[in-house]
Length: 566
Image (cartoon, rainbow, N blue to C red; front, side, top):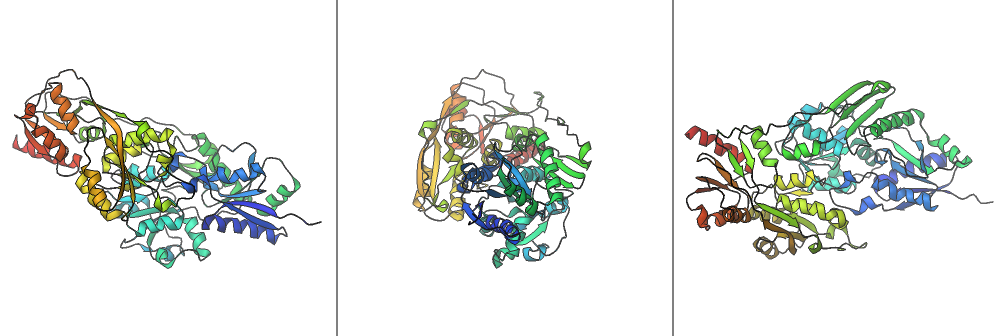
């Protein structure tokens, strides 16, 4: 009687196949026949920055092969497996664990060794030393909440960038200059290297290993997990006996139990490394994302000791005081977000937000069903977001229009980028631009000619930005994605020493319509806003200054010079 081979379900990526082959070899060495069943998972069909919010998307697609009976066992990277197991599925075995560290890679970083050399040694670098090497406002590629929060707790100036795809694709993104640095798990690079599946140009990148004491691993990182259906059988028990490495099994299960106590990693991004009965943990606060987006700082809770003694307390952290002394010169803004005012108050500038425009998303106007199963990801459109509210609208629309979340997002500058981030999306590009003209230049220099761009516009904006892109050969699809609505605001007093910051032409129009007081000095965020202010008679007695540079930095310099003059 012919014995059927054991069917191993796996993803199609090079790394996934290498891991599946390790499982197959172990089983075949024990006399069992095996065949690989490779498929693409849902996670492979996305370029968006919402990966960290979709826990287990790589795993579920593969484990469906078990439910359908198309596979006998499935192979995963253990760190990708959610702590709440899918009904009918269980962890059968963990192979002996490999390296658990993270690497930071760079195209050009003096003092760092080549990746090929770092893979051959075990030297590591303290986290603070690594961070000191990164220039201000470095763009760092990672969508992992653990990695992002660990970085931003010490370096809130860093710009997280979504770099998606297989390891080789991410390394290409670093070489192409979309990011200055990239964070990857050592084990993936090592397995590709040992299988001769990593190119010389990738091995020529510079790299450093972060010391694990400062940067504990994702639970399960470095281990290969094998899943099976719940029902026991003599065959699956034989497979477990062949494959399972008991010390690794115990360590990974300890790490996963800690993660489960913390809500599965969704609420509190966590690093947990188990070494026997000892664990090292680092846990970010639940509100780390919003704190970063508002310009506030946060601390990582750390623990090193016995597994049984681990207790996590979510300690509240101090907020920036919002009490304003109105006897001092104050900055009044029309901003609809508190990000900039929070940063300015932190720097000692009394700031009050008085938004006069309400923005409403027009979800029905956004494109739908624009991705086909056959389309190459390289041909997918890029969503261009030119304001923080455009980012908020995109995040809201993506909840009912999931294809919007799958495509890469490109943001005007830090403010728009942080608005995406606060909504749970890491944008794939950040123009670091202060106006639409700068953004056009960034897009021209960063994207291939002929790229398809999706541009949602405000109901009060013109088409000049889209026209400029179209003239450069980009395929632009534009629509009115959100509506500007003027609101009624109760009058309030402004002293002659106060300053007004106007964020948009529609805010200028609404301020005048509400007959709100106009101080002697007005700061304008952009040329179009300046034009609106200068052509509105209501502001004719005010001196108007257009911001020339990043908003917070410009205002800080302006306020300092004003204090010196006064």
